[in-house]
Every structure is written in structure tokens, then in C-alpha cells.
Length: 153
Image (cartoon, rainbow, N blue to C red):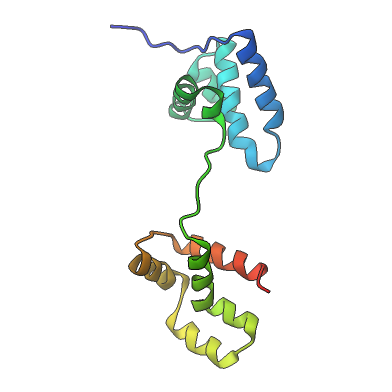
């Protein structure tokens, strides 16, 4: 039975690219990418997955996952995945129009009271699934509606 490779072996160019990646991955939104890069770097420095997990406060499963991702995809495997939006711009507009939050912006008080009785974010999520077969959580619906309202003309 073949022994599993725990350590990452990097060439000097790969090491420089990894160090540049860690330097660029600063800020709140990229902390996950920085952690993944640190996992690879510590593995290169001959630390075991258990040591890496303890030092970075990750699970061993996550450490193995990050190492596997790096082996398969290289430095691109460390970057944050880009998740496309599931709703088109037209669908977002339609969703905002049916929500009572858009009615609050337009100050139609009677419509607000009627819509509050009928719609909630949970009901809107169910409506999106029934109408377009797209599964979104009620929290995601709330985020979409609030974002649209902030940019409302």
C-alpha cells in the first residue's frame, strides 16, 4: 500500500507565487484564501497536517481538503470560488417589486399593510422556487431585497 504524501514540495517559482498570493490575500474578504495558502506553506515547511490544524485552528479534514485542492489545481485552487448569482437582473427586479420593502420605499401605506399579511421572506423563497425552480434561503432573499432597495432610484 502506498504511503500518503503529507508534505507539499514547491519549486522556487511556486514558492514565490505562493508568497505573493499570501501578501495579496489581505483584508476581511480574503481571510479564507489566506488560510488555505498558509496550509500549503506550512506543509512545505514540513509540518504535519495535525500540527497545521492546531496552529491555524482548522480541522484536520479542512487541512487535507486544502492540500488536495492545491495538488489538483495549483495556486488557483486556493482562491475564493466565484459563485454566480442564481437570479437574473430581471428576476431580482420582479422579486423586489413583489416585496413589501419596495412598497415601503414608495410610501403606499395601505399596500404595505396588505402585503405584510401575505408575504414574508420565507414565503418569497417558496414563491421563487415555485415560479423559477431556484432554491434560495429566506435569508438570501432578504439580502437581495435590501441590496436592491439601497440602490432603488
